Image (cartoon, rainbow, N blue to C red):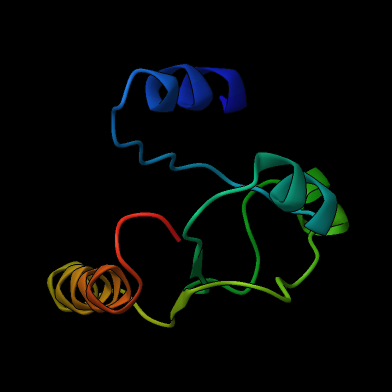
Length: 90
């Protein structure tokens, strides 16, 4: 997924990567510009993921319950505010 995302970015495309990234090392390796922590469940259905999961120490936005319309609006506003305050190259 990292390679596909980087290829798209190298071709001046915006990328949204949606996947479970359970450890700090894998999050750091992916090197996302903006990270959303979907903190909406206590335990996943995958025991191996539960065992290795590390609570994120760095993220841009934390989603705490399921309400897609509300969170989409709030996250969009946050990204627009960042872009407005910092410009296109953070």
